[in-house]
Every structure is written in structure tokens, then in C-alpha cells.
Length: 234
Image 1 (spheres, one colour):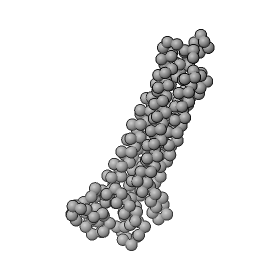
Image 2 (tube, one colour; image 1 turned 30 degrees about the horizontal axis):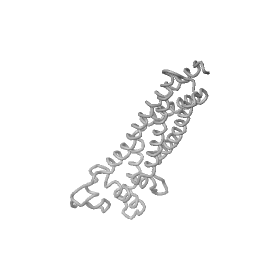
Image 3 (cartoon, rainbow, N blue to C red; image 1 turned 180 degrees about the horizontal axis):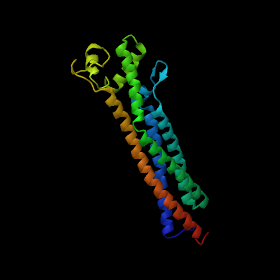
């Protein structure tokens, strides 16, 4: 091909970055599919109480992540092929796709930061609804079944207030502790905050790494495009 010198180095650097961008897309897709099929979250988010489905905000975020991973793999392949072929058209298309992806990622990051507590709070409210129904009426079998899934999946019980002591001693709704009847499990509010915060933290790290790679790729793709345009062979 026609480029030489520093531009040729940038060509292979861009190919290298795009290969890792393609791999990052695969990682994001894999992480999203794992989050979708994770036993803890899937068992909680498929619950129903009085005809109401558990909040699905988390799954909406996961589906968006699946789409982003698939698009990243396509764009990464486009960048690799455009760099090797030294095609200004493919590189221009690749740059435009990167700008759109980067803008979407920044918007999603801002939305996620502003609503980072929403997912856990929605699940906490859903748990509290079932918990209150069982405490007030022990014959509510559907609410009791929902609580059982929460308690067995997360190994927790209660809302973390003073009423938990009375509930634990006089209501048979908490999982049996191997450490004796006076041993209290962690409350479910704390557990729910932990499980969803950990997963959102993982998503944030992956998104930050990808954003840094995208910035370098946009710079290198424009430099390579200019180099191809100014090359005497073209």
C-alpha cells in the first residue's frame, strides 16, 4: 500500500487498537450476557407480586449493553479492515461510528451516574412490599414465596430496622441460621445495594476503558486518513 514512514506506523497502531476494540466489544457482550443470566439477579427480577413484575430497569440497562457490545464488534472489524486496506471511505465511516458511540456512551454514563441508586431502590421497594404483606398477613402465600426467593438467594432477612428483631423471633420468615436462633442474618436492604452496586461498578470500569480506547482510535483514524490523502501514491 501507499503510506510510508510514521503514517505506516499509525496504520498498524490503529489496526492494533481496533483489534482490542473488537475484543472489548466481545467482553462487553459477554459481561452483559452473564449479567442477564446471573442466577442471583435473574431469580430476583423474574418475581411477581399481586400481578406486578419486579422492576426491570436493570434488564433494560443490560439489553442496551448487549447492543453496544455487538455494535462495538462490528465497528472494530470495520476499523481493522479500513486500516489494512487504507480506505478513506471506510476510515471516515469508522470515525463517524466512533463519534456516535462515544456520544451515546457519555450520555449513558451521565444517566447511569444520576440514576445509580434507582435500580437498588426499586428492588428494595419491591422487597418491602412483599415483606410488609407477610408481616401483616401470614396467609399471603404469593408474598411469602417472593420473600423466600429473596432470603434464600441473598442469604438475608429484614429491612434493617428495629422491627426485624420482633419479626425474626416471632415470625417464621427468615432463613434458619447455622449459628443459632439468636444469630441475625444481614438485612436485605444492604444485600440488594451491594449486589447491584457491584455490578454497576463493573460496568463502569469496562465503559471507562472503552472510552479511552475510542479517543485514541478517533485521533489515529483521522491522522491515517490525512496521511492516505497526502500520500503520493494516491
